[in-house]
Length: 356
Image 1 (cartoon, rainbow, N blue to C red):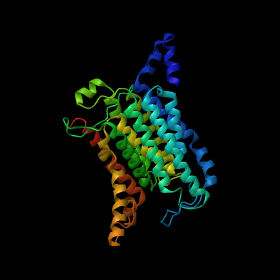
Image 2: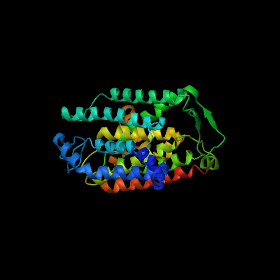
Image 3: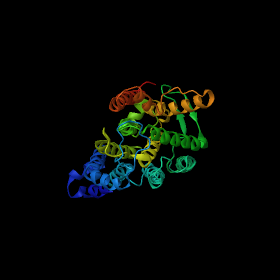
Image 4: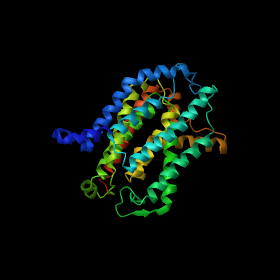
């Protein structure tokens, strides 16, 4: 925790006092993760190329057979480095975010490694991944509900309605499990085009960085009539590091991609999105800010139900981004249009804080 060391030097020079401010540490976290990604990205890509094999999911003429996967190492590595340097590890939310990142990152790594080892698109059993996600969600739910020092608010707040509050109590544990499993798998399904998932995560990260800063300030929270979350300011630092790592990875992942994030990146990133929504007490905001992820997941569910019940497909291919590609729209155009929608949804989500 570099910021503590620097802040302790305030007696020597008053300028070191700036490191106690969340905004300063958030900016430094962004710069740290971005610089780390740019400095080590090429080296990591070259190392991962040793494990490269044909992309069995690619149905296009231009096959990306030499593009390595497991790019999640670059994303998570830069994120964790910036968090260690600029966040306060005495904060429970930071511990939970780091725990989730490492745990789901390991599950994603096992899945990617299994695919590479056996030269197959089939990784570890889906049930194993779901169980891992459930375990993570359950542990986090237990901490949030039963940690008396944290005194976490287990009520559910509805967007647009300031007087409708649903107390969940111990059932908040199951709600936490559902959110983390859902978001983790939704982002995993979205990761199918160059820059698509990471660009959307970047947008969501920006939205939650703003929201976490607002709800951690009692004056802002009271003014907007949103739940005040003591300690959520450290989630702002973590989210800022996430923004930097997304920017750094996008440098290499934009079309044509030099590296794919794989499950090593998509599973923990999805889980992070879910946990951030829980921490800032805007769980239902996921419907808006994660609207693209929701549509991607629903397209798969609808396709499966339709095919099993009627033997007919509604979409040419799912997740839905492949449907648009098979309709003749170029991959990069699909990605940018999805980004635009994601930005609009993120802005709308921030706006909902005021509309109550």
